[in-house]
Length: 173
Image (cartoon, rainbow, N blue to C red; front, side):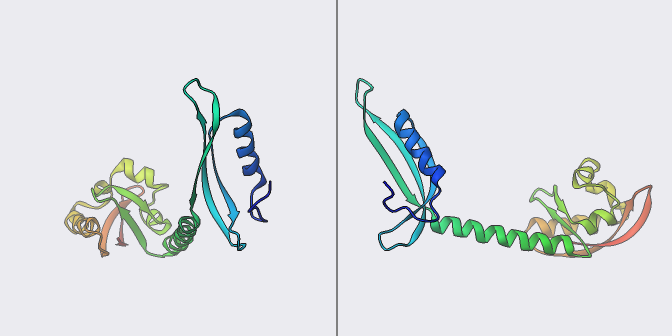
């Protein structure tokens, strides 16, 4: 009954499989299983009841996929994202992230403060082109083109912040 089960095996997932078999239903779980040599591996199990032409249960088919490496990559990616998010938010300069079409995706806290905006959504509703002073549109659009190509760049622009206050700021993409 506990063949290839070990300390990381989630008993709730085991019960989900048992219950599905009792009810003759499909089930999907991710569960730690153990090889004969004791190595833990994370597997995805897709359990499907098999029926004959009259609909009577004849057995079950279980497709198991070792997803250990995929989960490790997902965890490493999540850790990298947390590090980058921390750097992004701690950067004292305004940093803007734009989509390939030039739409605003994200702006760090320094950028929001510089533009006296409460949120990225607020800036999206205003439009970046309305925040940058007209005389700086050319340089700002040039920086956006750099970002669209997936390259990094910096520029200095005069922006209209708050109650039409003109502020000189640096922005990196």
